Image (cartoon, rainbow, N blue to C red; front, side, top):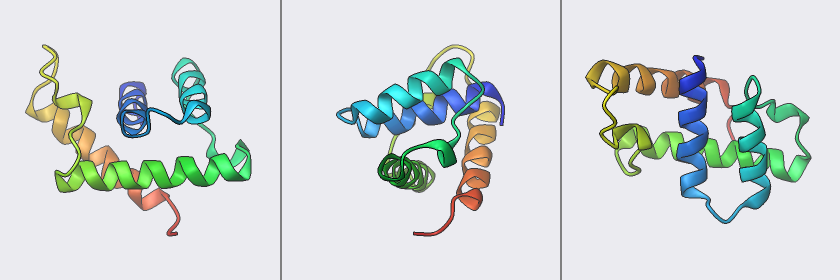
Length: 98
């Protein structure tokens, strides 16, 4: 996925879980590097991150959660939002079921 997509997904997830400092720390590191490697996380954090991503992505796609991509920043338009939603659908396919 494009870097902007990964950063937006991480921002959207942490917006839903603002009190999880461990997750926030991992996401900050992931945004500065090449992304997040969930498999390398401690088991408890790996489960929390995976569940948080799944729930946030599902919520965004269903319209129950508002993504930060809809904040009206000048570079965003319908095609960008469509690409983002497409990437979210791909991501859901990669996350193993509960």
